[in-house]
Image (tube, rainbow, N blue to C red; front, side, top):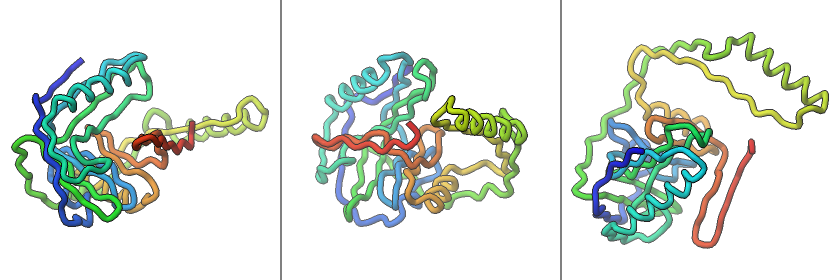
Length: 231
């Protein structure tokens, strides 16, 4: 278990003018993002971090760590809406016994929702100068753990088992290797995903970048929402 943080956190959230394109505001650094239809949050820097220990109690551990961290924070929030004040970005492994689950509280978070925009800073956060995303150049793709032929066989076998009545549903995935001419700027990936899949939630957390149509859970006040497609 690894924990890195600044205590106590000094947090300030203020209303700002509409930034229009949140992803365009990200600096040349490891970005954090949760975007859908141009709304959501982007962040950068690191005010606190925790590597969550694996096991059945990892969600309780994560909730306890965040509750303790935010309870001791000095918070000035002029906006007072969901997503203002201190925010943590998390990435949880699919396998509960695997290492790799992490929570990060960015130093700076810029957000927009329902016609409002706000900026949250922690401590004496310096604003990094935004530089244009770097084009990775030509990208070549190669097979991952399965070749194209092996993948086709796996799909055919799953279809046969569904037709035979042995399975009702199968969720398949395949990894590919991508090799670029230059270092891949995650902001390029985020921008392309957000443009091509506007209905999805485009995310970036600690090196994990992607887009998902699922909203596993959202808790706002007394309401809990969930949109799970593959579960």
